Image 1 (spheres, rainbow, N blue to C red):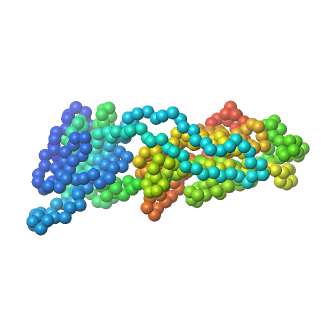
Image 2: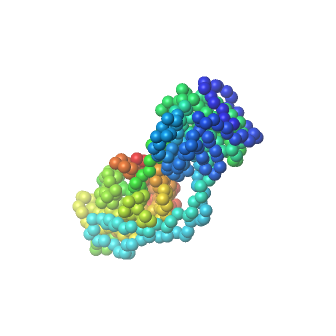
Image 3: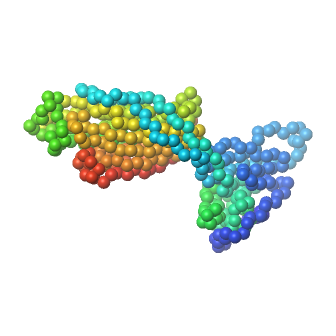
Length: 428
């Protein structure tokens, strides 16, 4: 049943779980709302159509129709728009086995100032996804908003506007008059979920929800490692099985040149591996539409040069480690979601032991949400960033940053605790 609330009513928030919601009734001047597997809203003779489907959210709006001369004298329909929030999609099948992508040769680049490589990798299609039932919806008209739950939802429902409870109902709908709402109103819908637990959804206006769900045209992620210091004094150099060009070690102290910088977001997609201000760098770019869309994901990886100096900071030699063990794994892509994993093990090209080692996992949503997780040796500094572009807007944002513990961590995981990364950013 439908309940109209015209003034704020401060009532107790008691979420019962035993009363089944009753079907809605409607008059000819109000939207008629029906719930089955999909939200169905009609206003007069017009039925709302699906305007856009996003991850877990479906938007509806009136069809673009011109009134005929005969119907022009009829009372005009108020503007009606709606959206429904669904629980997360369910995977219909399991992911396939790991797919390792690597195109480098197992060689060392002596006297190299660093390497940078770019290639498109083929992403496996995501498993078939089936949509779950709607959880709650919001229907906006010029008279106000209707908050609607499925008929199967049990217990008492509550609507809160700007922190105040404006209505409760044991039915499936609660209406909120326009006098209680403005463009910045926060509307929350509270009910009981399928497991019997209280659940609350924040429901912006349809216009605001559409604006926040604008889809990205390009998304990207990067993971760089770098040494923040200008110089690194190498201790126990001989014990790591290291040597210079002649195979002998200088009798004096040995130094490596660091990257001499702090954390820095990339300036553009093309400069992630071209800037040469890193020890290792990996990037994956997903184009959601246009000629660069489809099943491919553009990948880039690079290794910075390692430069050795004596105690007077006189240059002795330069080498660049191989990028053979920098892998792009588990590349999967759908119409609105992509996944990829970076796996890295890159050692000092002057030594037989000691390596930068980490694994980072990324999930890219076309809505602009990017998530990162992973683990690795706590050396050197790590920086994980995400990128998204939509229309003429684009932006980089931080996913995670970590500071090196000790260069002893290069030897084994037992020397230091592994570093964990977890981050999330919404762009642009």
